[in-house]
Image: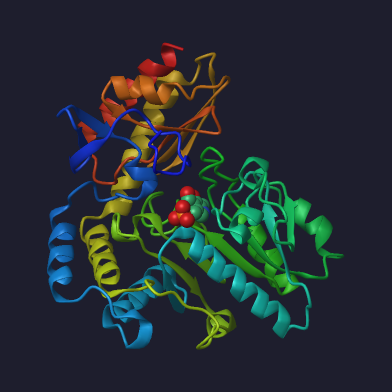
Length: 388
Ligand SMILES: Cc1ncc(COP(=O)(O)O)c(C=O)c1O
């Protein structure tokens, strides 16, 4: 632990000095294959030339004006995000947590407009939505919440992937105004719900007059083989949160909404000093261009199929493997035992991966990996599991 940093992270014993594509080099010049992309952020890989160039150019022109003036790159980004999500308007912020805060504030306004004094939100067990007080209160993890009481109120928790549990409480949940859900739970260990789950939630929300919020901070932006994971089904949320890969490493996020929900925030009700500055927004526009022009959704879908099939073939019958789950390049391998030490073992084999919930190997490789890199990840991860 460093003397002058708060002790918030259990860090690996390595520091990276530079990166290129899916490769990272540490301070001693040792090369690693990156199978986690800085937790789903560097989807275009490290030092992508178009991203580097646009950052350099915009930094030399104008980085920041605050939202005191129009910001044309913010307007362009909002238009692009509206196009790819099919929602109407965006608020641009700096982190996933802030996008969630924005979504929750919209829900409160929507509830009050409907005459509900204490608007509530149905949230899921084992969900993760961030670390601010409201976001951790929405999160379905006692570990994330413990010690930070009093929690923000108004959250009603139900099991994930269980629409009937919501139907049961719907008739007497008078204060509920919205459902907040990750279309694929990330921190929980890449939990993919049954087909039809999102549509069932949409139906309940339509019947009850509730808002449906999809948190795609981890699953969004081509990761699962679509711009957003909800696009695998014919379902549209009312509110969407997106972040992580949006500017390939520059901090940025967005909360999008459609219809009346998109009109509730008015001047003075919400804001952010840094949010939506020209540097981050122009970079995000370039990232979206690259994702589209390089067909990264299709690539994620295809490589994901190949990797999942390879994992299932080699590890499907392994006694330590409980489940192999995923969609596109969002892959989880659940083990029957604690396996945090695999992060260090992988590092020794020049592979960077993540273990979530102590038992689930989580892979979020950059979307630009090639077939040989995908094979190397599969081979090394299988070797690690077989060595357990
Ligand atoms: C689904 C989801 N929501 C919210 C967050 C919080 O985002 P941030 O860490 O950028 O605040 C995360 C981060 O991992 C996430 O995966």
